[in-house]
Length: 361
Image (cartoon, rainbow, N blue to C red; front, side, top):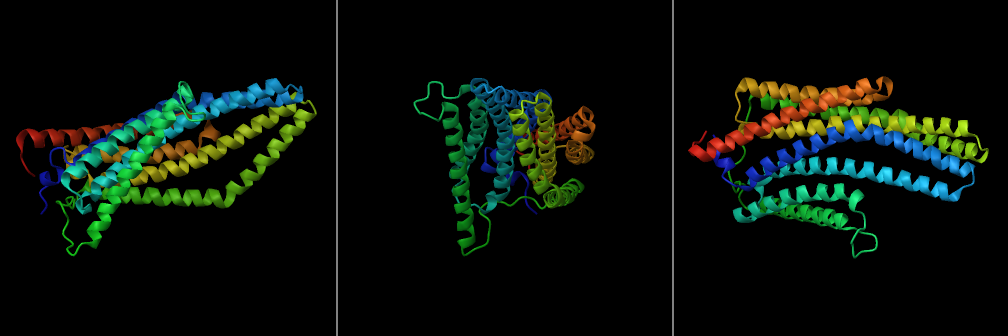
């Protein structure tokens, strides 16, 4: 039987990866929920208006107005893109940190090196989304480079450091498999078979399977048809602009916005359900470190899985039911966030109890 306390030593690489990874995921999801509520839908409306302005400027044969409209559209797209990238990169770094925590018994590196790599990874995982977020606002201000601003430099450097840490960790894993002995270099994770662990593993696997099936259905029946419709709508908008038809421009812009919205929600539903499935599987491995009662653990596990199902379903229904479905999707995300915060609090409780008493389990 593995001593649980020995697998979570004070300031060990595994502890840093678990705590830092959970914190990154929680903060990334909170940011994503705030962005969805206060920015995403408003931004989409402004994009449609900018597209109409550009087409109308073409109809008036006003190149300066068309240039300004496309510049506004590009700024809106950059704003949206950097926000989504901030959200995705922070959560992705958190997922990767949890994976590295699970792999630590099989990474043949010195303990001090592992600790340094964990600190470097977590700090870079924080700096990367900060740099991405600032790209839209800082731009090229005070930059010595012609096309790269300071925020991009920070993001690129942080991404390089994250990749470097992962490569070194992979080298440590390869070294383990090349060793003559199969014994791990540090105590392995406890083989937890509790109800919470089993439900997270099962639920996560089912979510990933459903996500792949949903994506396969969309790719088979809708994706290529929608791409053809996009080209047709753009051609119709250009023809309406040439004919100086304001009503035609507005109609085609509305059609383009609806099609882009459908494409976005389908992809979001597909990706979110798979991401939540992966999150559930990763969380199953750290349940021994969640210092909560069995009843509390079960409650938070069920809340996390419920939110993981509610959010992608509601996202897929947003175009049909509008703000009602959007609000339900935000509620699903909130359930996942609350469950994650509770589990993070349980891990912090475990570390505090372990460090203050030195007791083992």
